[in-house]
Length: 295
Ligand SMILES: [Zn+2]
Image (tube, rainbow, N blue to C red; front, side, top):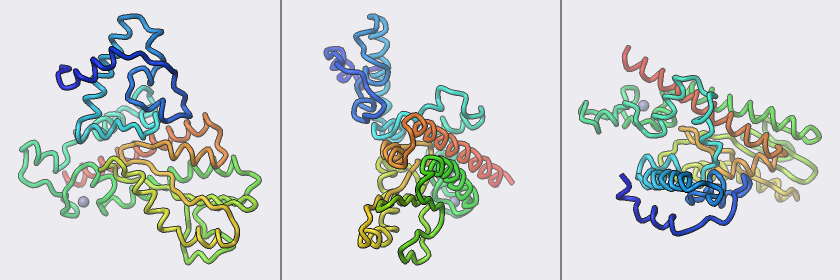
């Protein structure tokens, strides 16, 4: 079972962990070392250490899988996975989420891969239909995507308003003091000479740096607004809170929520809720897809 990862397994046996991770430090808590996710290994019994090493070997194999390994990338915040151990999702959504993360749903692309049908294209738009096509790209599910975005935005907006009661907060409005040309960032917070301008985006996780790419796209979109504020002497943050379509969020989201004045635990809780919203919405889209394909 551990043939492919034996090298990593033996390496870890010979090394001892030295520190306990903190939630604020992405480099310690998201490292691939077996001691980092659940405390120092030196406090465990020999059986516990062996169990930890076996878990780590399995994790290595999972991470190295070219497609399914994307589910476990170190840049993702641990709150991306908290639903796995809780009952936050109802059973059907839970089943959907597990299969979506591992790309095990019978999408047309998978059915073609599994030899069950010759055609892997979407019945609605004719493009190749994998799970990310349904959750992010197919125009047939646009109303679902809009609802998913609005649900997450409303959740974050409540927190932003609560934590910035003495600041100017604009949700989905053209920002003041500049010529916005019709652009309306999802969240704008202005305090004295500082502007925080954020969009909320749920993007396809078809590549490891998908969240980063989505952020850059949003930064480009609002770059002119940011420039106008800078020319007026404001300190500007132009960024995006990005979630993956199969429920991942990263450390940049945490940093941005903290920048918006969200307390540490509230930020983590908020990210968990947003991840759950994403997965529930994904389940609704999958039901819509299956219903349409069978009608
Ligand atoms: Zn389609």
